[in-house]
Amino acid sequence: MFSSPDEVLEEFAQVKFIVNRSVATAVFIAIKLQRPLLVEGPAGVGKTELARVLAQTTGSDLIRMQCYEGLDESKALYEWNYQKQLLRIYTDKSQNKNWEEIKHTVYSQEFLLERPLLKALMAQQRTVLLIDEVDKSDEEFESFLLEILSDYQISIPELSTITAVHPPMVVLTSNNFRDFGDALKRRCIHLYLDYPSYEQELEILNLKVPGIQQRLAEKIVAYIQAIRQLKLKKAPSIAETLNWAQALLELGEEDIDNDVIKDTAGVFLKYRGDIEQVTAQDAETLLK
Amino acid sequence: MRLTVKPVEERIIEFAHTLRRFNINVTHSGIADALEAIALVGLDREDFFDALKATLVKDHADMPVFVSLFKLFFGKKPKGPPEEDTGSPFEAPPEGSDDGREASRIEGGNSPGVLTEQRARSRNQGEPYLLLIKAVRENDYDMLQYLAHQGVKNIGRVYPQDVNNVQALVKKAKRSLGWEKACDELFGMLLNYRASPF
Image (cartoon, rainbow over all chains, first blue to last red; front, side, top):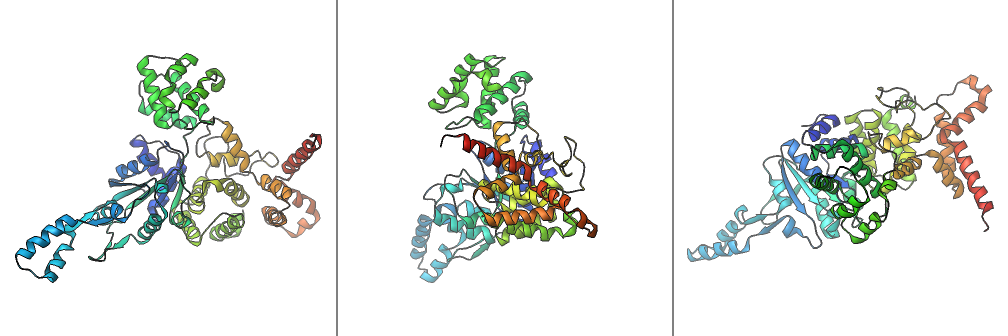
């Protein structure tokens, strides 16, 4: 696996994921210290993508768990397959087996429904466990998560204690929807992923939308970077920059002016208020 | 120079304790992680900064204070690999011309980038002199004392013959904290205050 932050940077670049060195260093440290990596930052900067790329570059499976309010252990960890258990009990009963025997068989791995967390702990090979939008889960779940992330083991009362053979690389993402617990944060290596710099975004654009004219690419990025400074309800993400560039390319536009922006603002802005605010301003002024 | 006076581990622990004084929630495990991380990535300034940031700061809102204090603690380091672009971040900036380039370099990662408004703002946040202004404005005697202490430390090694030259040493300590800049700003605030009708 990675032997230095530079290597992380190179491997990521190979799969066209451009980050700065700070990001690579945090990733490197998290892997080496076997700590969960907590990635925070605005929506659309590539937090989830980071986990995907990490799995890809380390040859690991990606196991994703999307958090939401009300997510509980049975959805995150495991559940007994009651229907199957019942069927088994009926069958066994008809063969006159006694309860002790039946009990033993219905609480075995065959009847266990593995949910993401258990899957990650039981994996026979390296995995990246992505716990997406952890700030959307509730507090009980959080402390339960903390327990698992501290020793990478879980006890299933009816079965046994399961300890991970290959502790998964854990990536947690958060949009600061809720300020979640200190205890969980303390376990993690922290990474704040921000919007890319002008140079970086230009590099990403050139990589992902090949064939775009350099002058247009520069203007697109400069414009997007400028409107990110405005107070918008939803600032354009990297994906939206790319979509916009693609759209302009398809439309055969070679330059950005007020008319072009008026026609295409819907590609990179998702709220009417935002569109009105942005189109009310002169593009040339914003670009300065 | 300071890094050789004390083992770097001790310096990091001291740094972590100081972060706590400034209400950044640093835990024992965080410190342990920091030490381990430094052992991994080494003392290259940028990596050193990133490693401490990733292990000690768990809340992005704490970054300005972290950057200020980092600069106070590790701001000037005499040796280090040369950087290809605008001046090495390792070297002490020429005295008196400390314009905060260092702090912004660290904050902005590895790209010099276009100086956006946001960046311009964050680069100011990384300045020790802002701590000084804050302390004066809030009558925070503890913090003033602490800053004075740091200033004296920034003088580095003192020799017996320096006794004839105390003024220069004091000047050096003040400069390391951005004393003059703080005075300018405070004076400016005072003038504005007078000028305002209230």
